[in-house]
Amino acid sequence: MDKVFAFSQNPVLILFLINLFLLVIGCFMECNAAIMILTPMLVPMCQAVGIDSVHLGVIMVLNLMIGLLTPPIGMCLFTTARVANITLDKMIREVIPFYIPLLIVLLMVTYIPELVLFLPRIALR
Image (cartoon, rainbow, N blue to C red):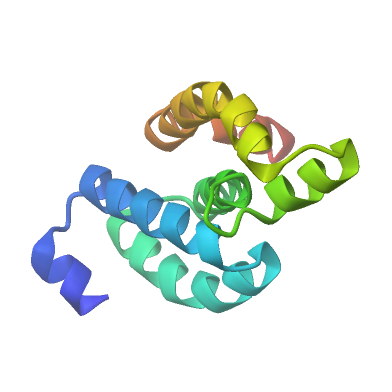
């Protein structure tokens, strides 16, 4: 946490770094394990700069979900290719166009927190 804060305490930059970190982790690590290991490290850092915990949770899940679709490990790619009885290369080529809307949604959810937080705020009134 100190190394990240030595780099910057700007919440926008910290969210960008968290997104990059989680996208890479999601490519190589199973989602449940990543959430269990990384949440205790990321929550205090985000709370220190004023990022809501619910917002961070949605960002984490979305990043790790995108990682499941991303080679080199991409567990969902292997499973779907096997079920569809097609090669992994063909599966990757077919999935590439979907990365653009996924990343756009990730950026929107990251930098427009009201998209995520409006419903919990309504429920907690």
